[in-house]
Image 1 (spheres, rainbow, N blue to C red):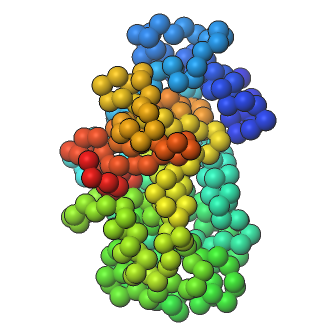
Image 2 (image 1 turned 30 degrees about the horizontal axis):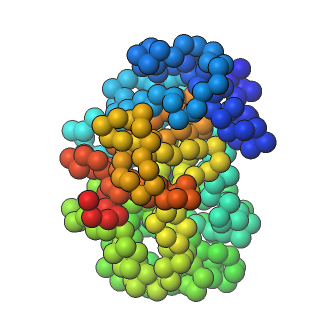
Length: 333
């Protein structure tokens, strides 16, 4: 059954709720941790009666630190681990089939930046020290998929100079500088040149650093001024070790989900209640690409939805354990 679900999760011709219920039933059957969690809510296997997918229980994201969240038997192909200091407990995400992650990466990224027109230039200090970083794996995959051979990682702790991008400029390909937010600010401070005309920037949020917290609007202004890139070409990516899908905020602060993913904002005191538009709460996520782990996750990220179904990330609900992709604060809280 898992192999058929593997293809079904990205099949937009099948209604999203139908795909969700199939994945939910599969994970109840094959994920002991999630199955035990659901017993509290009275959900049994083979859920077939009509139900809103918003009623399905979301497991707290911290469980990825406390247990092996697996919906499969046998060895994994990949293991992703969250970044942080050696004294921290790291989240672990066991990947049975890397092709699911590859498809999630490509379907979403190339939706905004066509594969045959785009080259990525990556700058990832901090993350490069984590051999199990899902971000590094994703960027490596995008680099490898560039048939022009022009995508690459920038050497760490060195300014980005125009001559390093000369071949890209001559190729007329779209340049996308992709990196951790504070790493990109370090690039500016080290004396990097402006990016070529038409270039885009994608920031992944913050990283473990001694820098102060800043608001997203301030970050965008600093990146725009430092690299001479208009704000409309500065984008954000929302992703994490525990998710195999990414969301992008194109030219602004509001993220859109891929069609195999759903984000809701939940009342922090009552996760079963979905907040009204523009009401802050905790982000709840259904990510069907997490087929072989758990697709139903309650994060500790604070955010809000707008009236168009987009979401904004407003930092960590508890600030004591900042993680890379959630270090920035979008608005005063």
